[in-house]
Length: 224
Image (tube, rainbow, N blue to C red; front, side, top):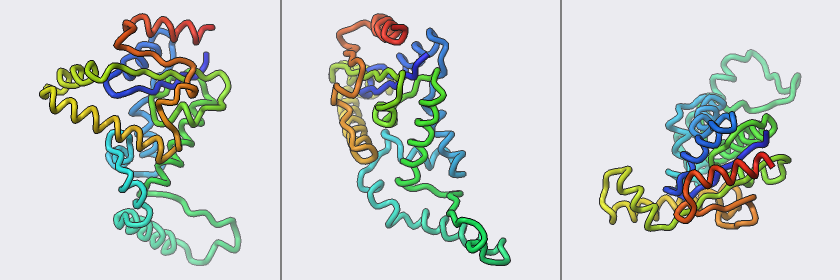
């Protein structure tokens, strides 16, 4: 069974469709689990990884994180000091020297870990991967189906207002903000435009096509 990547506008139903597809096809659906895996890899809380996720993305923070993130620099210095304290001699002459990331994260480390984990999942197969540039990272991966979900802006605003119990004006601002962050996230980390249709096997408008039919269409593509 091939790998499926789901790219979705906020409010277009990506997570719901991903979970339904995974259930019908007997695949694993991975979304927040990827965050947890990154956190485990670099030994930081999930909340620190979430700061670099699309929902919280700030192109300014991400761009300057490796230069001006004092917390990260302090953690790096502490890690190096502890490592040197444990060693009684300079081992760099005996073994290849590598810096082991432990206890801190910045935008470069975040990207490296996301690419590493999504690439590994692509080799494993039998999985539905939500967002995080999967369509770009696995663009050359054999037996991978890339799906993009879109929906009319007004429909996404109405869905957001109901879900978050906020006014339509607040929902409109919220959706617009998340759309902008998502675009910036993909450009910053992967030089990728989510709206470029040629990246996908199929683009579906969930405002025009019933949800159940979307699932059937993708299932048909996957099963060939």
